[in-house]
Length: 272
Image 1 (cartoon, helix red, strand yellow):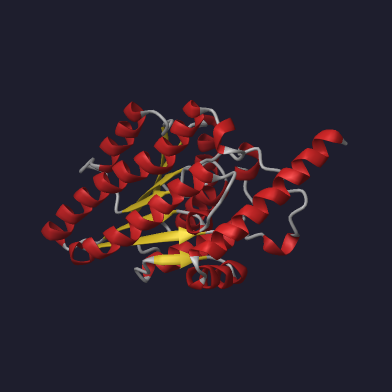
Image 2 (cartoon, rainbow, N blue to C red):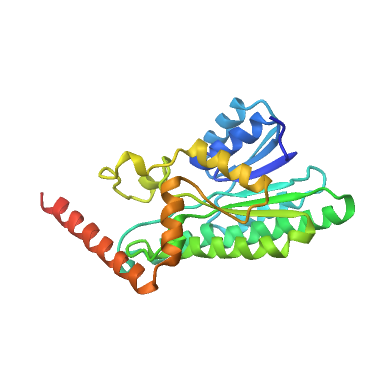
């Protein structure tokens, strides 16, 4: 398979969907800039891949380090024609029990970094397209959570609603500037995300889970078609279609019921 892209910058490339995206792009011949906090993991990924790989260590909860990645996106000597905004994290639990500093970090990584990097990439790619006709692409990894009323996941869900809305809007804005934009909305996917978010998924049935490699492949295919929005997995597609037709009051009621079950399970675990 021949890649549509010459060089891609992938955030959150040290694990999960981001790592699978990097592997699949490399397998198709795309050079990479891989971004994450864990240098050791990024170096291990670099050693695995048979393309040119730059390691860029950055903590995207810090504005100065977001700016480092912005500068790399704007570098004319080693141009990037594909940006993948994959880095993200969340914390579950009741809103008033969340640490405000952690919640702010979630917002910075999931929203501010996505906004600033997409802007830096779009600015550079649009100008290059006007000069040379070379097209660019932006793939933003959002979540089904952004489409849901999600008690006990309020901040994370709100950030992903932002990512989806931003992506679909700039998809239209950049259509004449040679920049494809796709938002991918995975549901539950087998990665380290749930462990880091301190979410107990031991009772979740196996059939609800997506495979990270499948999500990556579907995402790259959707971007090649300049599809504005991709929901991965049959179950997620069905639920997404249903949730868009349900009244808001029904979604809120479903969210309250889910929260009550979650709190009851947590209380039962705490007293057992």
